[in-house]
Length: 376
Length: 219
View 1 (cartoon, rainbow over the protein chains, first blue to last red):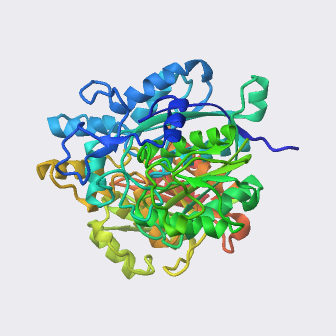
View 2: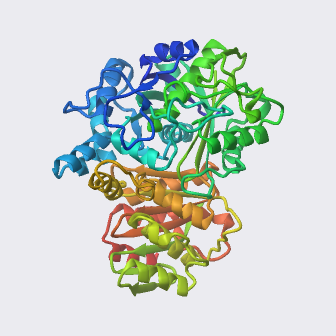
View 3: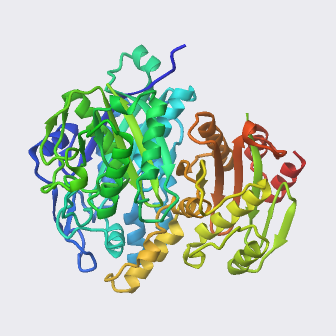
C-alpha cells in the first residue's frame, strides 16, 4: 500500500518585502535587500541600526506586532483553511511586546505573552475547532513544526495541519543578539568572505498541509510534497554550532532517508545562512559531507529579509517551493565576495535550476538542526 | 512496542525515581546538584550549572534521575541517538522577565548575554542534550490538554517513526519536573517500568504527583 504523503496545498507570508509570496520572490530576484536603518526603538544599546521590517506595523497599537501580521494574513486566506485543521504555531518570542510593555509600564500582564495565549488567538482567528500546539526549536521552530505536521499526516493521525509562524523585531531580541555580538553593523552577508554577523528580520507565514488523499478528494492544488525530514541536536554548545557540521549532516541524512532519496537527487538547498562566521562555515561542511557528488546550488534569505527567527523555516520552505515551480534559485542577497568554502555553491546571482527535489535547512540555539525535503 | 525504562521527578523540596523507589528531600538547588553528584546520579560534573536558569537546572537534574532510574549510562565523550522533548505551562516567562528587567534596570543600554540565552523555552532541553550528549531530535512543545500524556504520546510516535531510537520526555518548570525515558522494547536489556501506553493512561488522568508515582510504582 502506498504510504500517505503530506502535501502543501496553500501557503502565504508577509515579509519585509511586502504582503504575499510574489513580492518576496520578486524582491529576492531584484537582488535588493529589505534590510534598512530603523527607528522602531532606540539603538544605543544595539550593535546595529539595521534590520528588516514589515511596513505599516504600529508598535504603539493595542494589537501586538505579530498579530498585526498574522491577523490580515490569515483573514485573507480564511477560505482555504478548514475548521478541522490542527494548528501548530511556531515562534521564538511570540507576543514579546506584551512583556516589554509590562516591564516598562509596571503592569502585571507579562503572563499574557505566553505562547499558549498566542496559539489561542490564532485558533480563534482561523475558526479552528480545537486548540492547537506550539513548537519552539529556536530558529528552526517553523521548519520543525512543518516536519511534525507532515509526520502526523504520514502516520495517519491527522489529515490536515496548519502551521503558522511569526516573530517580530523587538528591543528585547535586538538587545539580546547584540549582547551575543552576533549582529552585523550593516547588512548580513551570508557565505561572504567578509561576513560579520546576522541581521534581524520579522514576518509571519503559514503552510497548510494535507494528506494527499484528502487534497485529491477536495481538489486542492498540490504546491509541493513534504517528502522527508530530519531533526537532530549538536549536543555541543548553547549558542555555537558544532563546527564540523556533524549535527546538521545527521539531520540531512535522516531527512533523505525519510524521503527515500539519495543525496544525488537533490537539486538545490535553502540554507540557514545567517551570515555569522561559524554558522555559514558549519553549514558548508555539512553540505559537502552529505552532497559529495559535487556542488549543489544553495542560497540564503537572510541578507534579504533578515533572520525572521520563528518565521525563518516557513519563509525558507515557501521560497523553496517557489524555486521548484520557477525552476530557478534566487540570489543570495548581500553576498558579494563568495567565501572559499562556498565557491560553486552560493552565488550573488539567480541561477536556473532544473530539479524536482530541494532541501531546506535551519539551525538554532542549543544546537538544534532541522532539514526538510520537498518535492514537486 | 515502546516502553518506559526510567522516571525521575523533583518537587520544590523532594526528589526521586520510580523504579529504584528513591525518595529524598533537599534544601535547595545547589544542595540537590551536590547530592546528585555525590551519589553518582550525575556521572561527571555539570559545567556551568550555577549559571543555568532554574528551568534548565531542574531539567538536567530530573533527566539525570531518569537515566539513573533506567540504569542507562551516558558519557561526555560519546553522543547517543536519544532525543529530548520538553513541555511546561509558562514557556520561559521567568527568564524573559529576568533578561528584560535587567536590561531596563541598566538604563536600556546593556543586555546580558548570559541571561538572554535562556529566553527560549527550548534551552533547558538543549542544556540537557549538551550534558547528556543526546543528538536526537530536540523540541519544546505545548499541548492544549493532558500535557504529560500528550508529551509521552509525541515521544512514542517519534520513536515509532524512526526519528530517534529513544526519547526523554521532560515536563519542567521552576518548581517541579518529571522526566520519562521512552525506548524501543527491543533495545532494553533490563525490566522496563511499563509499556508507554499504560503510563500514558495513568498520566492522562492527571493525578497529583504522589498518586502518579504510586500508580507507576505499582504498574
